[in-house]
Image (tube, rainbow, N blue to C red; front, side, top):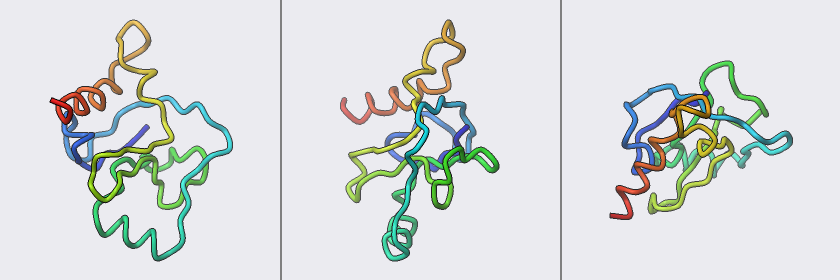
Length: 105
């Protein structure tokens, strides 16, 4: 489950909306030194967070996804591509891809 911060990649969601997203990793988590963490938090580069109590891997500050300083490259740990069709259990991840298509248009 992710809580969202609105960005170009999340514009199809409401601010703070919680979505379901499968996690398909075991060992990876986000970490950064204090200066980097302060910078990306301060510049609004953290766009996905694990909702309270759902951080499966100890990611610092519950960070699940970040964008680069230009906001056009996204890196994230969860797998929203696995939840885009109702027949597969839900469509919570679809908004990320619809948002990305809007950027590309």
